[in-house]
Amino acid sequence: MAVLLNCEKLGFGYGSKNFATDLNFELLAGEVVALMGENGSGKSTLLKTLCGQIPTLSGTVLVQMNSSLQHCDPAMSNLGDVPARDLARRVALVRMSGIAPDRMTVREFVNLGRSPYAGLFDGRSAEDNRIVEEAIALLELESFADRQVSTLSDGERSRVYLAEAVAQQVQILLLDEPNAFLDIPRSHKLFKLLRKLAAEKNMGIVVSTHSVEYAERYCDRLMVIHDGCVQVSRACEARQKGLLNWTEC
Amino acid sequence: MNHRTGVGFAILAALAVLFSYLTLTSGSVEISWSELFTCDANGMGCRIFWEIRFPRLMAAILSGAALAVSGLALQTLFRNPLAGPFVLGISSGASLGVALSLLAGLCFGHFGVLGSAALGAFAVTAFVMAVSARFSNSTILLVAGLLVGYFIDAVVSLLIAHSDAEALRVYVSWGMGSFGRLTRESVPVFAVVGACGLALVACATRYLNAVRLGDDFARGLGVNVRLGRTLVLLGSSVLAAAATAFCGPVAFVGIAVPHLAFMLFGTGNHRVLLPGSALCGIVLCLAASLFQTLPLNAILSLVGVPVVLWVIVRGGGR
Image (cartoon, rainbow over all chains, first blue to last red):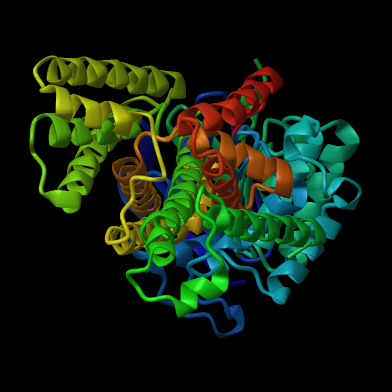
């Protein structure tokens, strides 16, 4: 499988706070990786670093900018060197705790996902509209597509945020606790959807979660941040290797 | 363009045409259209039309569009429904520039008044930008804007205390706001400056749509946040400065019209709201310009205050 993202000796944090150093990690096309760790361990900071929102403290993050993965260019681009708009077509970070948009319908919000492809005056083509409607259908938002986002429940809003990222048509999807506000059936549905997206659209997905159950059941690999150290293992071997010991007091 | 948007634009365009016609034809002297195109240029009817009514029409159109777009862009940028050129002190800055020009004699014809207004507006904008970069809390920004307004009032008071009666009369008259002050010769200047301001804001449409969810979200969509913010602040300042220089501190258009536009079009998409707000502002100012014998700001406030109150009571906002 093609490598979409490659971290080499990555150190991440902000200001004087350094969460971890020497992280070596490759995100492959078609896989879902669970990012786990205690509160304050640096999960959100790592996700922000991987999408270029905050700079690396050390090491490099390389991104595959070739959209045709069948003819994968072995030379990847340094995250810091990629123009912002090009990067937005490759990587998206979905945060569920963001500002609740006022005066914006669900359809308008999902439409923002096409912004990286828009011209100077932010117009939309028929193709853009088709992709937006597909994303709305995929996340089952049709019944409230014309409602204001601010009037939705947290769970409904989570799906809207994810639909916006789907409309962005990125290859690398980073999700910060997407099931934090979801009930159990919706959480299962969400993780199944992530698996589907990874398989059908050949996406690489990193999802931070506190749920060991969902991580082991739906993710290919687990990445655990604990005591300033990041360990990565296949999901089926993680418990055996002791990556989940920190979860038991 | 959906049905509601199309109907909204059609209604506003029809109203704009109607009020434009009334602005050009209403007055103590009746001028027929045939007389306009047949009479000699020095005839009374022609002169009234081209020297008084046409500039008044253009003042209402240009300042209505300028202040409405400026207000909308600032409300979106600061994610605050009560932001605008007045509340953030940008119009006060322009007023100070004009006060310096009229009361302290730093005037070089119309370009001098406009230049002074622009300089004052930019100075306040720079201050607002510095405060907004330091504090993300919009309440602090509004308080800072109000304080700037008070400070400027104090400076203007000092200028008034040391000015002669004629200069003071001109400044007080300017402060009441009027579309009748624009001269025919100044129309092209106002139009060009206004077009530049509108173009700057229009070029930031993608930024304005994305930044409603915060700077980080906009960056995630590949938007150059710093450039967008600069375009909006620069464009808004140019628009507010031009409108204030030529028509005086015209109240409430900047705050109230974006809300009227949202109520009419029902969308937060700035591809619709920017032209929609401009058209709403034009219609409102054209309607106000029909009441020639009443102070402009009084007429506009009668419409503006209920709208702003509605926003506060509703508790909604960007």
